[in-house]
Amino acid sequence: MLAILYKWHLRLGVIAGTFMIVWAASGLIHPLLSFTGIKPLAFTSPVESVVVEGAKAPSFLPVQNVSAVRVVSASGKSLYQLTLPNQPERLYYNAETGILLPHADVARAEKLARHYSGEKTAKVLSTTLQTTFDKNYPPINKYLPVWRVAFDRPNGLAVYVDTGEDKLGSINTPYKQTLLWLFQNIHTLKFLESRAEVMRLGIITCAMLIIIAMACLGIALLWTLKRPKMPKGGRGMHRRLAWIVWLPVLAFAGSGLFHLWVQSTTTTRETVQVLPIDIAAILSLPQGVRMANDIRLSKTPKGLLWRVEMALPSMPDATPNPHAHHMGNPLKTKTVYFSVDRGEAVPFADTDIAVAIAEQASGTPTLLPMFSPEYGFANKRLPVWRVETPNGLVFVDAKAGVVAARVSPLDKTELRSFSHLHKGQFLDQLLGISHTQRDGILAGIATLIIVISVIGLWLHPRRRRTFKKKVA
Image 1 (cartoon, rainbow, N blue to C red):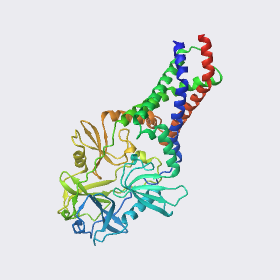
Image 2: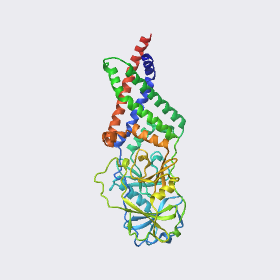
Image 3: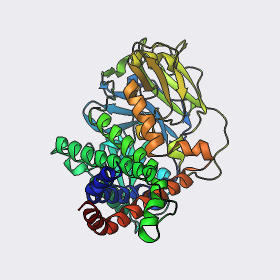
Image 4: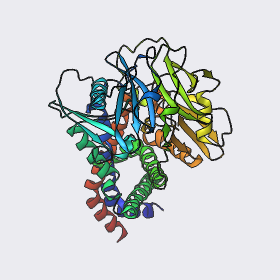
């Protein structure tokens, strides 16, 4: 038995060792990016004070069909922000006079970029409207269209913002782009995704299975060997490290393989309502509302309604949290709906929107103000409503009126597996540590995997010769 285990351990050694070095080294890029990469100064949208008093209903504006209507604030004035069908740049009209403000969307984009980046003084080099994803702004960023605002900074800072939702799409520098490119193309073989997806799946699957087999053979050898003393030198170090890393290797490889196959068969299903709005039918603004922080038209089962979000008193965060994008922020607003013909409050709530969009809800929606293992930070949107359905979970952004994510039972299992076994999120509560400390632990484990693999490759030729002599 020992001879069989040893033989296959040697046979798979070079291939498995090489794979482990490549995947562990490329995996280290992620914590490196977390430690050294550019981070937003703010993670939530700026809070506006939108004054309704003095504004006219939008029916007087010189436009007809639009896709979305918001009331926003700029330079102390209330403006109508209109999104037109098939026109990515939004229009802004003075809510009192109806005068069109030229280049207002560009100005709003630059204001948002400064808010999220914290850049107050650097000159804006360019502001470019982007309607498609590309290598510098991949689909994981979710939002389109966005404005790319480039600043005159030594680090080449560029900020992508969505003026329709006041959301941050991404914050980028050439350094961050380079690290992401290396991670995506080495760790996940992304360069094959669009050209040879079957080949990509095959290569990674074979590699992970070989690594899993190698780890199982290694631990079986450790349990089978009955030597009272640990060997000295490289062999001893190899065995000592094996006791430490065999379980993390199985966790990383197994959860990574599970993630690969589930994600490869899953498509992003974010539905956006694009029915045109007849602006002439909007006869009244919300009555009794003097000021709010978000006012927009919402398409509901009861027809068009004004959705008014008013901020509740809260204390600002004293110190920016570098991992706030993982946690989200508690909801600090209340929401009321109003009719568009008389401006009267109506008995309607965000939960009704969530149920209508999710369809077939089997329970009461619950508010999710922060990310979780079943709704990760890659989904971007917060807060969302968690709705249970017969087909799984649906997360709805009631403000935007879209599905933020659909999570089937299989997706839920995979997300928990990847969050805890690949990203080590269980360590946060188990050890009471921060995200930064957890990243440090994972980086240390990845480093040990590289070390044991290098030692194994160094020992391989000599051990192979020794094994052949014993067999002979």
